[in-house]
Image (cartoon, rainbow, N blue to C red; front, side, top):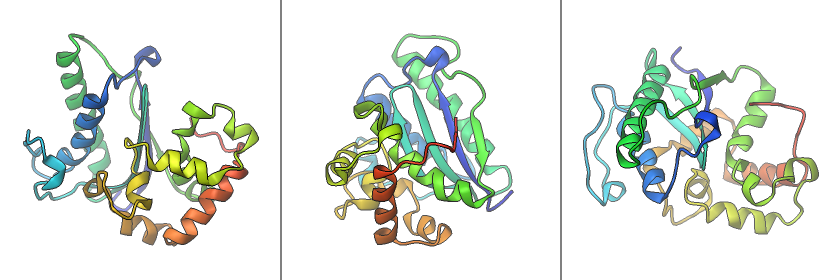
Length: 216
């Protein structure tokens, strides 16, 4: 339904990598923008695509996203009826075609049907945005969810320097990443917070992670 907020995630078949290099990651982020258009996908192969992105009429609002080697996470709000399902269909088909041609593969890229979790209670609203942002910590700190991390300054710096996430666009004042992909203002409005409050809560979450809410 229009207005629904969903956590979207999927991984590679047999847990294989779906992003081999930065070219793949950049193509996926471009796809987040290009396939988010009412009529058809935006066609542009410009090297400087993100310097001057074409106009779009969105079918979803992208609130947050994170790419990991073998999976991805998105936080989306539906703008038109069926918008999220259509967006994910376009994204999956388009990226799979690109990946198979580039890497001389064939067949399915993703493990199964993309999972979509509707945010419909306070627990999910409080937890999932942090989950999406902090997913990248699993690479450098595999036990962080059990033990927490005390040096939040160091952790936030690592997150700001990881380009393949919406996180830098929320907390890097220079907005050097892919700010056109997300709707930052809408996120703060929907989750009834501002940058200062969200950053404070994020630090608290890093120090004392909530482990009882299982998402995937």
